[in-house]
Image (cartoon, rainbow, N blue to C red; front, side, top):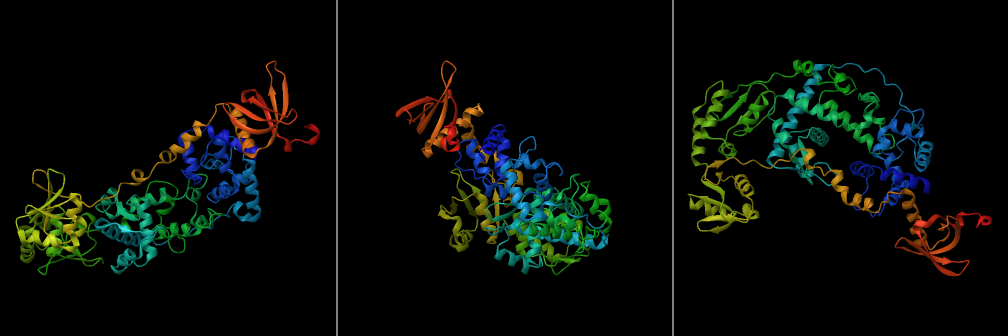
Amino acid sequence: MASDERALATWLAARSDDDLAVIFAARGVSPAAGWRDFFDAADGLLDPISIDRALTKLPRAALQALADPAGAPEAPAVSDTLALRSDTGTVFPTVAARVSVLAEATPEAFTPLPDAAPVAGVGEAEAAERAFTAAGALAEILVTARRAPISRTGAGPVSALDRRRLLEADIVDSAEELDDLLAAAEHADLVATDGREFTITGAGERWLEVPTLARWTTVVEGWRDRLPAGLASAGGDILPPAHWAGAYPLDRDWPARAEQCRRIAIRWGLLSLDGGMPEWTPTILAGGDIPTDTIAPHLPAEIDRLYLQADLTAIAPGPLAPALDMRLRRIAIRESRAQASTYRFTPQSIAAGLTEGETAESIHAFLAEVSLTGIPQPLDYLVQSTADRHGLVRVSTDAAGLTRVDSVDPALIDAIAVDQALRPVGLVANGGALRSRAERSVVFWALADARYPVVAVDAEGSPESLHRRTAPVRSEVTVAPHTAYAPLIATLRARHSDTGEGAWLERELDQAVRAKATLLVTVRLPDASERTFTLEASGLGGGRLRGLDRAADIERTLPISSIVAAVPTDAVPSGRR
């Protein structure tokens, strides 16, 4: 153990700060770990519990490489990110001992999987239909997240309240489907997790506007790129789906995760329930470009026209192009999600569109462009009358930096002032207006959600569009390991000596002082001769070791720089003391 600790400490000290941060993150080290030097770090990483925890994260090929370095394929991640072996590929003996114990207890985890049976083909039309359905359902989830973040539990899944809300809205058929769609969205950076919420990202906002084929491509690329490394073969291809469940044989949580990977592949048209593959899947699993030309003919055709009716509804006689669907849903409520979708215009839906930045003119122009039946008079009147009333409440920022709410209708100001739903934003009457310390966007959306005819205005008094908050992509919200571990790494570097032997000697002497151990200390004298003392270690400081010389029964102080070796007396045969 001591030689392993010494070798690993030397190996760690030679790594860059970025490499150390990656290693500590991969091993699950707490940034607040109380390590004082690299020897403490090596001691912690070589703890049997820590080693076992690291081994459970390894794929089957890496476990084989540890158990049989000569006969197994290379697994660089073992040495690069988990500090289980040296640069030369030599497994630290302490690690090898733990591997032997685990290999004896679970030999099947250290053996190759049998060759997978040939995979049968599957109906492309059926697979494409599943992909189209998944894209539509995920779009509905993202639209929901755009209105308000979807809450999640501490363990990760969607909260019971939001899960029930999405199920009752027929957006998904089960909690499992919801979890799978959100996992796929997170892989593609369409949503981000901020504390206990799923929030739509800027990429998610853009994804809603692109055609279904582009939506599918984005999700499939994200899913493939975020697959665990253990699902890749030595050549870089994705392992056959039949082998996914056995990729991490020591990880008890892996089977459930592997099953979700399989379910996502099924939902997005990459696999069938019995493991069959449509023609585009082998290319995807081989790491090639997404073959959009093979799936495109099997996806339902998207239309760009609809029927407007006098009963204030719009009917799309087929799947509406996503960009048009999103634009229409800014001013109408989608009532059905079948192949022929129905939308209904209401004063509230028109007002919501005006709040999002639409005008009466832009709404008329849009409807005239997409309608096959012109604009019915009732709908024309609804748009114009709602626009005439909209903007009666104006939200701005005053010279003091406070949010100000004004209206030409004093009755509206009085109603807002006593509205219990608006209490959280803390509106206070002041000179015929209302003021709040909350941000302008917070007050704006609180008023909009309470269905007031509100508009945001800039410093010049001109209307401007405000958008609900979106989350940045993953790379912008994740704290880099180097940042998280910077204080710990700085502590290790500060205590590190360029001379490994000297650093190791100081550690041994420090431990001896703490244990009040008796040492055989060999010192090199000025004349280059050496002399050995039997010392009861009592103190270490100022570059000197203090202790009681038992033979002479006096206190000695020895310069550490002159000490050649220090060995506990209980580690030396009695005849050699």
